[in-house]
Image 1 (spheres, rainbow, N blue to C red):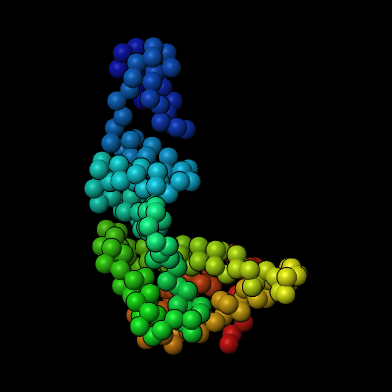
Image 2: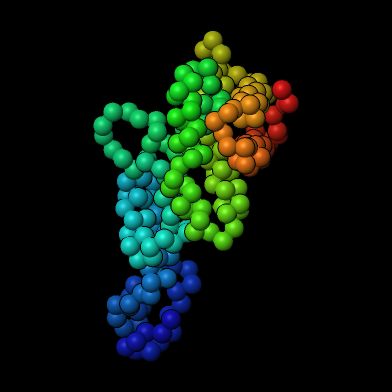
Length: 219
């Protein structure tokens, strides 16, 4: 970009320039530039409340922008603070109904999977994209990876047994069995829409390859 005061060319390819390095003039950012800056800051922010605020600011500049709305979906309600503990704040937590269905009542399993696959906000955001299938592949892929990383790979039962740390081979085998169970329960679940089952299956397989280096055994 060129400074409107001194006319010198400013390289803003790496990060957004707020002031001219030559004359100090404050620069007016275009909507696109400001949006990109907010997205960059949100990506780097570890505090979910601040990340959410940055994305809401981005939404003000560009309402119904696909990238902004997608990132808001990714964080779910993790930005909320205080109140009673609520696993539903975690957008991928409902996949626990596929890993450990016996730990929940029939009614709760349906509630969990409905909140994940039939979320009205998910449908609204998907419609903002030209290729909805590609969006769902990316979204389910992100959710599967985050779930396996936190609730499977990070589970105490998969990392130790009787207070002894598992070997790497044993740890991976235990994690893969969890993924295998999720795939079986996914296929048999009446609460997962039929059209979403192939996409979710591929998302779990891809996440398994990424996190554990291989696909789970067929059960």
